[in-house]
Length: 524
Image (tube, rainbow, N blue to C red; front, side):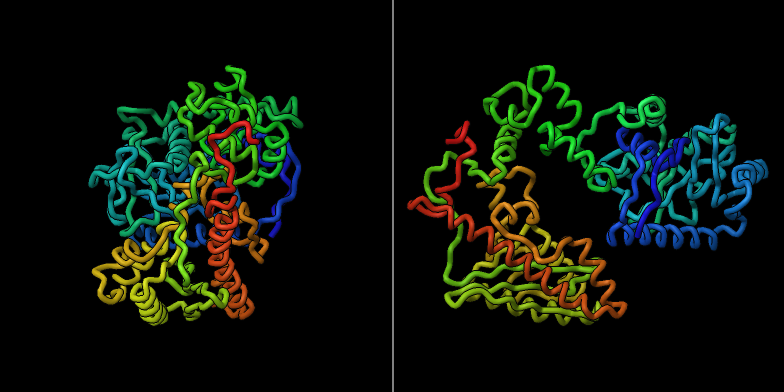
């Protein structure tokens, strides 16, 4: 799937632009490019659109007086006319300010008695245990913004900023509710709308929006004069994972050994380091572990591993690392689709070598999952009785198996719970790696295993990708079955490769003794 060339694509600032990286704001408008949209991204778009359509259809059935502005024609003028008539709920609205530099396409506008409030639909969770104060109300009572107290999920601020942008456009048009609230409907169950005030005791969403728009306007003005050079230099940040310009920016950052390539270093951290004469990751690596220029020794340790492009021992390198080593070992990994387990891979390693033994359900049904879990739990019970260690990566398997056991009323033999089995008979290899090794870039298996010399057979391995493959299998693409089996086999083989690498780094004193220590700098 290919997106069109992007150059001066959208001079007005729209809702999808709000709170985006300013370097991306420049490239989206002034840098020509054609992007290949991968299957995973396309699937996310499709799933988001399908979820939005489903929610809006439910709302239409709940509110017979709602109106939809159909695409085509002057939708901006049609929106104004509908708001003048005080339509109770309006779908398909288009908002534009008087200068034409701000536009917005809210999923819906809700009449609140004296004006409208915008509501957006998002295909992700928005209710959290912490975060901004909110009130939640059922979809059938969506005009009540004073419902049960709740919290808007930390990390989803951009949802609120987009909705605030729509509210600001409404205010400029004289159609905003005086209640100064915005709503977001997430994928939380049961379906509900979270209403959030634009002002609270800590911060103002309006002020945040105004600050961002001023910076975006300056960025765009600069771009007209200097289309080949963004005003804001790139900085690596979490949103880069979903940005089409990431490769371009990363190439620039790697060329100068930019500190933001290190996890935990923001552009403001980079500026502060630069003010103190530190401009590269290599220079951070050379700092004393107790340096006042960094918040903790973790950053210096990570910089040292990054500079050496390898895993380092987190201690002084004396003595073997305490890695379990038994005659028989098992590596374990599961694959899921929409929260349901369809594949459990077991890599059994003994004196005869390693063999892959998958347990699969290709039906994608509850009954199929139950049969898989019955067989899997019997195998895990057997490993426990024989005192065979089972290695896994993070607590993903424990959490998913606990949920599956509860769904189907199953248990692991004589163990009181799935978590009790994991506590007694499993080894979280990710947690072990965090305790004993320093990584250049996090502790994902997809990061750690390649540093140990392992490569996946698939060019684009990952959990999200595997969901696309399984979906294709359900639709009749039988070749996906083998692809999924190979991907799962590689995941467990990757865990084994990490242990094999650690055991191979032996200076004669035991596993891991040949791995350089992060405490010795510069390295020998």
